[in-house]
Image 1 (cartoon, rainbow, N blue to C red):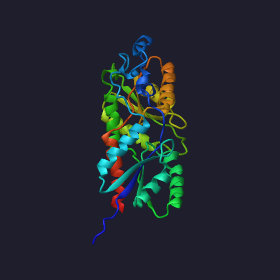
Image 2 (image 1 turned 90 degrees about the horizontal axis):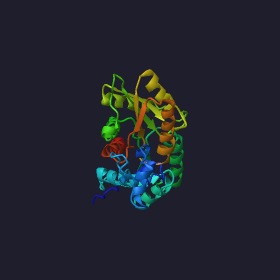
Image 3 (image 1 turned 45 degrees about the horizontal axis):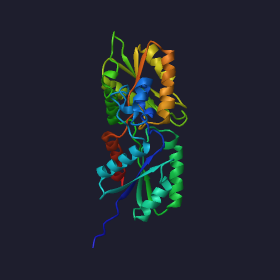
Image 4 (image 1 turned 45 degrees about the vertical axis):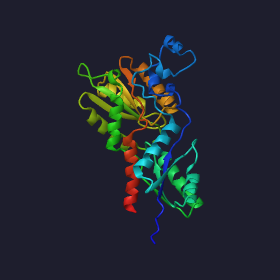
Length: 305
């Protein structure tokens, strides 16, 4: 009698956050409704329904909602006969990685792939990841624990960024008077010692190639490390001659980093360059291209095994 081997466990590992439940913590907060428009809520409804709110608002989910949807879609992609997908986060959202591995093991799943669902190669994806894996292996020595590659600079992610800019419709500036439109691609910040952002520069080149003539792309971090938003904006304005900038947040969901760091710095840049118009594209949110990249990272581990 042939025994059916238990499926692989796949832990979708996110960073985690409790913020971003309100549209005011998303890109569309850059275009705030007037006080008169805000009074139309009368204590009920969502600010996203106001006439002054951007028509391109995607009503992005917050991090817990969004990651939960990603886990569900990834489970569908991989198939229940092949994998059991479980969401885990480094902070805020339980189960944390050590408990997630124990939960799978108690279900008889002792071959587990840790899939970093992170948009970068910073401390969370390098030093802290190695430390976390060592700790989990020590707690659950019966589990074969493998690490998948992160999302990386995948061409499908460049396509998604271009689409998010396209989602803005007429709100997105177009090239005029021979001056290109600047695209400022901004990831969540990490210290330079942990991420040199060479992969981000590669992604920026992919985006510029897809946008075509009339667009200039530069990349930055929201805070902590280089390249800074100030540095990238200066290159766009002073070296490439842009007259308008679209900030494209390379961030999954609304939250504090988007509003405080990205939009906050963009407000300062607007004062530095008053003649340069500035707008903000939606964050990445949940998208099938992200799920496809994540599923491919898992299949790459299967192919090695």
